Length: 427
Image (cartoon, rainbow, N blue to C red; front, side):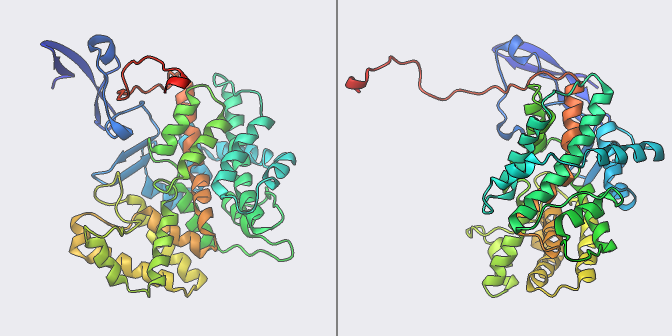
């Protein structure tokens, strides 16, 4: 098997090495392309461009495979706690009992957020989008942690990781409570991480908050499924920003902003908006199925199919069961969920959708779970961000400790050629 690729340009032949990953993924290494040929590649959206080598997540869209550090997502979701998976993503191995206990205790140490952060969050109007507030507040955490992380010191990195998980979790829940007009809540170190997330969001001071174990299990799975997803828009943004040696909080903040978009983290919100649209139109699911099949109709089913998974989304199989469990446990009677069930049934049985692999994806089910929990649509992506946080941290750590150069994409210029300046009075 040849280990080089040949390029013939203007009668000259150039060879470029083939890089092979541990799962036999192959890439042409073109780091010297411009120096040797004067050419660059053009790949809008970077769909065929590998920006880095990474040992964190393996994704095979054709076969529906997702693994964190070699572990199948199905096994992790069924057996692990979210913070265990966070440790795995960031540090490369599942923690021992002693390591896990120390990890949780270190996170607990940093769960108190500086009181001035309350004033910063109070400065936003209640109408502000939660993701905008979360991005700004995460960036503001830099002001309270001004000393850059020494990425060559494992102790410094460990402390920074635990601090980021602790502070970000609290800030994310504060964004919700500010919007709801609720007093800001604090972490209880005597309770588990998922239990704390639920009470940080929903606990009312005047009432005893009861934590439903079915909800805990579902949210734990959902956060694990969102933990990392290779070089997606927000993750590659975190790496690109971090490559300038920007701090961890600043890099995470950039990831929050990228995740905000409707085509990325906002997809689960779009699912509920679509279901609401169908409900408002009278709830005729078949009508909208036909609209989705009509090439001339602008309507599109949200939460079906995936940009990467060409067969099925392995995360969807896991979270479908969790969504069913949540709806059953809460006993919710809402026509929105009846519409969702009808759409799901059609997508799994109708030959039109089956032949195009338009199966329900993780966003379809996560949107249903978030709505069942009582979250407003605009908060969905905040919960997504809590789940994706360990992945962002892991990617930032890998990039910084791996000594990757600052990111600097090229372009093909299509503007005006050189022209002379014309004075204002002669234009």
